[in-house]
Length: 93
Image (tube, rainbow, N blue to C red):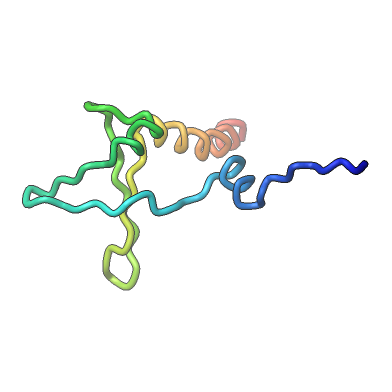
C-alpha cells in the first residue's frame, strides 16, 4: 500500500505566503464617480462603512493605467515596515 501526499499547488502557496493579485470583479462607475465593491469582497477584506482607503495610481506612457485601493491602516504598516530599517540605519550612524 502506498501513501499519497496532498500537495498544494504552486499558485496557492504563492497566494498564501507572498500574496498575489487577481481580478475580483468588474464594477461600474456612476455619474457621481462612485463605485460599489461587491459584498463578498468587502466581507473577505473586512472593509466596512467609514473605513479609509488609500487610492494609488500607476502611470505608464503619460496615462494612468492602474488604480489600486489599500486599506489605510495597512498602508501605514507597509510604510513603517519599509522605512523602519532605513530609519534605524540612519539613526545608528
